[in-house]
Image (cartoon, rainbow, N blue to C red; front, side, top):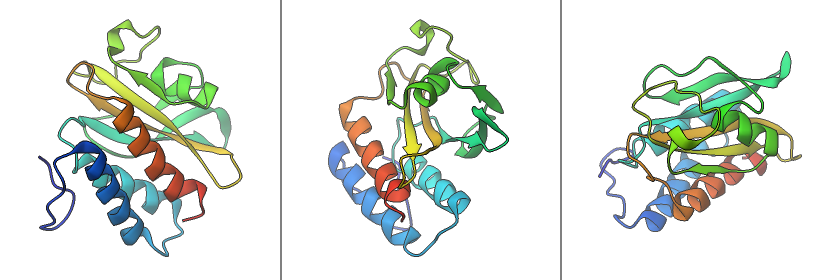
Length: 167
């Protein structure tokens, strides 16, 4: 299994691993107000904690084009630079404000193939403390059906604690 940081051994069981990584992220980010630093840390620590993560990162709501996402901090191969709300899995999450859990990206209407090796994906909307959409957090896997309800609950909890509760 991938390890997130230093010599820390993370639990093998996925839900326990998310809980441990959540505590580590909170510890690292304690007192850090900068949004880019917070996003970069979350992307890095999650990408390095789970072997089924292939591409991990944020698409941020563009302040100059509020119905468009622009690539933010990420780990992985080149990401798409911009995605319109409603387009692809990321755009669907931004449009609906709901997590998109996609077992087969090739079956998703309008899927945007930033990397042809992507097989499955989870995209979670990221809200601030006032409930305003800041970004979406996108994780791709090169394996089909790589994400499940445990991933969804773990990622949603980390994002809520990191961005919606003011840090």
